[in-house]
Amino acid sequence: MPYVAVTALSHTGLIRDHNEDSLVAGPWTLCGTVTENPQTLLFPLGAPLVVAVADGIGGQPAGEVASALVVRELAAIGPSLDSEEAVGDALKACNHAVYAAAVGHPERAAMGTTVAGAVVLADSLLVFNVGDSRVLDATRDGLRRVSVDDSPPLTPGRRTTSLITQALGGATRFSAVTPHVTTLPLSAGDRYLVCTDGLTDPVTEDELDSLLRVHNDCRVAFELWKAAIEAGGPDNITLAVVRIGE
Image 1 (cartoon, rainbow, N blue to C red):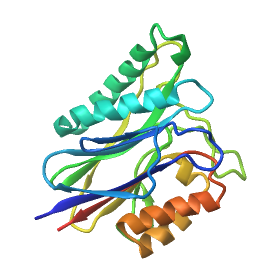
Image 2: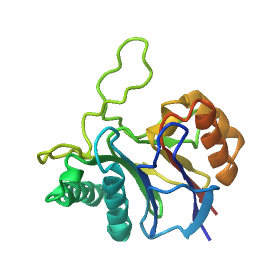
Image 3: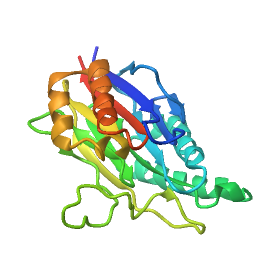
Image 4: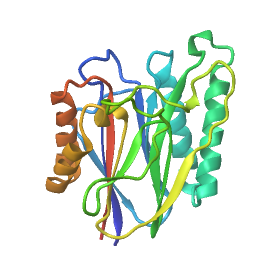
C-alpha cells in the first residue's frame, strides 16, 4: 500500500534561549519544544495530509504563540485542504486568527510567524508558504526550491537575510497576505524537505543536497540538524522530510 513517511525534528539551536518554531504532520503537532531524536510517522497515501513548519518572528513578542496557533489550525483543517484555493483560504484564515489572538493581550502585540509546507494528495502535492521558511524538492537531479521566499532582494555578497516582506500576523494593525500555493505532480520515491531558516541560513543548498543524496528518513534528519549545529546553530532548527513510499 502506498504511504507517506514524515520524519520530523525541532531544536532550539545553540544561540536562542527558547524554541519559537512549530510543526504539523497530519494530526500531530510539535509546538515550541525540542525533539531529542528525529521522529518518523507513517500515513496512508490518499486523503489530504498537511506537513508544515512555522517560525515565530524573532525580535517580536510571542512568536511561539503565533507559530503554535497556525500549526494547530492546519492540523484541524488539514483533511479538507484538497485544492490550491482551499490552501490559500486556510492561510488567510490563519492570518486573521493570529491578529485576533493578539487582541486584548499587549504581550502579544505584533506577534507573527512564517509558514511553509505541503499538502500530500493521492497523486499531487500542494506546496505553500508565507514568509521565508522553505519547501525543497529532493527528488530529482539537484535540490530544487519550490516555495517562494518573501524576502527583499539580497545585497551583493550576501546569501541570506533576516528580513521578510510578509508573514502571518507580525504587525500592530491587520495586514492581508498573498500566500504562495502551487501544485506539483507526485509519484513513489519523491522526497521533499520542509524547513525553517534555522536550517537554510547556516547550511547552503549544496550541502543540503549532498546530505539528502546519501541519507534518508531519521538519518538524513539527524545529519541536516548536525550540519546546522556545526555551522553555529544560530537559530531554531525545525524540519520535516516527506517521502512517498510504496
